Length: 97
View: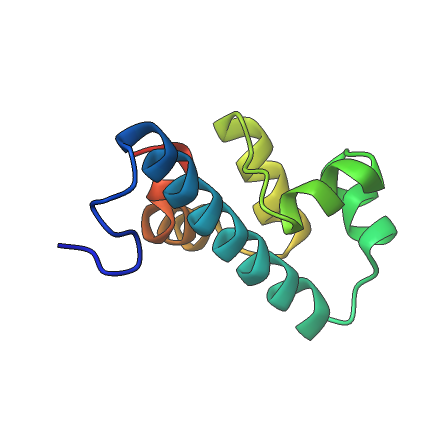
């Protein structure tokens, strides 16, 4: 039993809460990597081929919708794909898996 999301929550609300939690965790990890590298949100978004608002949404918990978008983020963060894949696996709940 997961005490973070008690079983008393209806399953649909629980699923939404779990996805939100893992999405926000993924976003915090991404932000931490960006900030540690002293890169601005605008700069990194441009490097990834995104609008700054898109990148900001990712850091706030919206997860990438495609593997291509995820790879663009990895490249902008100067990560290899296997490193980004590890983050995705760690936060798989953000994608409902």
